[in-house]
Image (tube, rainbow over all chains, first blue to last red; front, side, top):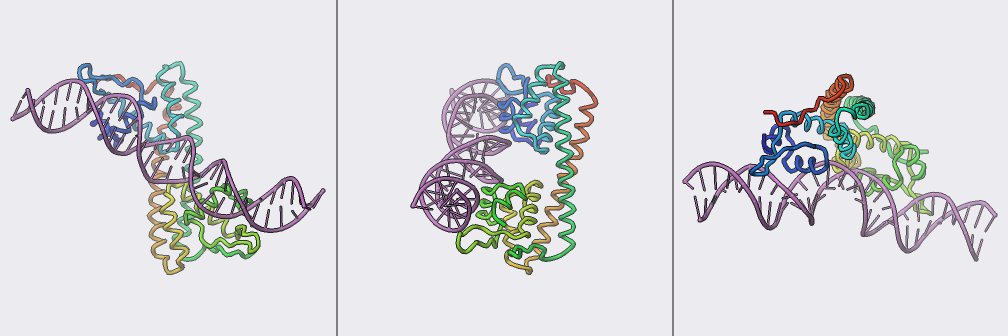
Length: 123
Length: 123
DNA sequence: GCTTGACTTAGAGCGCGCTCAAACGTGCAG
DNA sequence: CTGCACGTTTGAGCGCGCTCTAAGTCAAGC
């Protein structure tokens, strides 16, 4: 699988894929021996999609890097990874709750009609 | 209410509050006539919290500015505002769904244990 | 052999959302 | 009068996450 194909299938630009690799998010990328072009496996598709999900959920790149390095270091790092995932899951839960609360506010606003915001100094 | 008080109660720094005002997100801020200090009303607390919610939900500042300008232009702009809110609500819904899907993936990963990512070139 | 096109690299540039620095003004307590 | 806390302004700086440019390499088709 070439970088262009991975870009197409994941929706992440080739530029960004190279950036992710430089940033330490995608270890173990093999190369075509003659051309030097990157060769991706099917597993990379899932990995990139997982990275995108982490980003969507607000995880900063440096934390994703820490996670990727643990993965690269092997199975012995699983306890640390599990702890990170749990912490992240809690973060995601909190974000979902905030968004749901916000959604309710929006819904009320949409239905309520005009002019709730009163910004004059009254007190 | 002073800017420091508003900062404390909303959790948004005074620096950022001034930035928001410059950015056109907070119209109608009155001033103490002698000192020139900003005077905020109770309504500003709600407005700032609403702005923070919009940001949390991923709305870019320029769109928040567009909304704020409609508010400043008065009640006649309600149809446009309502349309913006509806579009934003749809955006929030999509984001919630993405996060929930991601959350399920995380849950599975946490339970499943080690070593799902296989990045070797096999195909 | 020449062109075309997909890839490579190092490194610069950019938009966003703050965040802070510098210099100055106001008002009150000691 | 002095000092201090708290506010003001303009404008610069910063971290993040890409995004793009320039110059070069390689493989295939005419």
